[in-house]
Length: 411
Length: 165
Image 1 (spheres, rainbow over the protein chains, first blue to last red):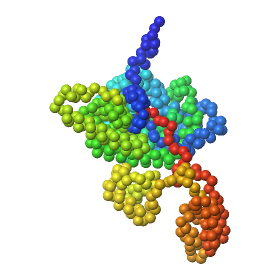
Image 2 (cartoon, rainbow over the protein chains, first blue to last red):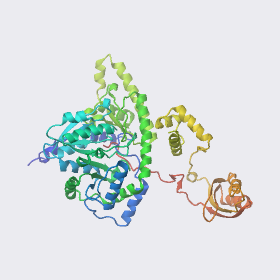
Image 3 (spheres, rainbow over the protein chains, first blue to last red):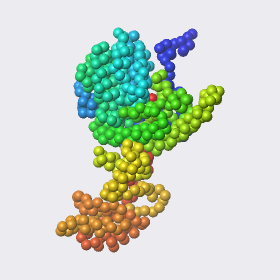
Image 4 (tube, helix red, strand yellow):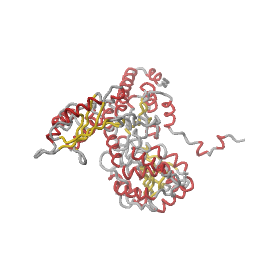
């Protein structure tokens, strides 16, 4: 009889577990932890949205919707995309409502990628992109970005990575984990490369509303790009609706149809309860959304200021709610830093390596936390960084000491 | 630009009056001295009326009685409701007071330690004022929300995962 290890599809078996998982297990066992390791808003979904959802349940909205999603919601999404981002999509056929952007991403990759097709993915990257590409049978091609370039991918890099197998460029700006945004000029250069090599762009714009300087520009808005781009958007971040699991894809009708084919057999439709809530979010929740964004911006400055004072270099995050400071001068690796910060100061952050090898030397700090928690966490981190630097200085002449220090601390 | 900054300072302080000038400066990307100056200016111009804690007195069992009094007033030539309103507003028992549209004119919130005390204030101080036509007193039974803050419930997520992608 075969073992489960043999039975499980080798593609899945050989897939490494998320780097975040390990850290989650460590942190979950401790009490009194202040977490800057969270990839979701600290706000509860605004009450009017929750209330609208409760009302929908009272009225008995508990059935399937069409595969594409409630028509009213698609209409509203089309209107919103146009108003907020100057993106024009026909709610009949060019918009598909999904179970979070996660599903939309999976559908887009599966509908596009044939075995051996290459997917270009700027790195550090959100944890799902590479595994979803592999599951779809594609070949992920990471394109490392650097702090010196503000973690922005540039057209030259894309151009250099292109091969005859390249099919998809996966853009995710504002970026998780770096907070990077792509200015219009760079997007234009990248668009030119995409057109020259017939690349399809999957543009994950889940953090679009959380853009702090200037306005968010979608690559789909640039001339000639609308038809080769799939825009992914959702409600999780801007409206503090992570647990509702609701996102959508917008793009060329033929391609949305292809995604919908997979969607109808695997998911059927997104939950109607979440769709009703999202309808309220778009109709009446924009003001509260903007207030939340305003608060993230205040916290962003608070965090940036703290890193300046700690003397940890950090590229200015133009969007999302993450800062990605470099911690190499502490002499610790990303994992060591994160682990010791957790055990010694009870502050959780995520090691940059969870987002790919080019994240080594960095940590991801989410500022989706209350100001008082942020201030306290940053105070603890300041003390920690000072202590580690002092120790490093003292131990420099004795390399043997350094070895001893490398033994992991297990509280 | 300057106006926006003022706006943001007011919003932040309205949410939490305990932010220090340093906190505000960091969050708004300003110099501490600029913030201090701006706040002082806002105070002087009467845009910031004061700073205080929102106390939930009922919770420690201290007796406080609040009443909402609807007052009808005969407006006077030239000053309208203002002269009478000011006479009423100056009493320390009056916590909040507003001129209203609709069936009555002034909504007066009065605080005291007992119902008798509040009733006595209305009968001997408020009602006899010249120009006051009538008053209706409503006693508050229970508070649910105070200046935008829910009295009994805290709006906090049940518990977020400690680390998530």
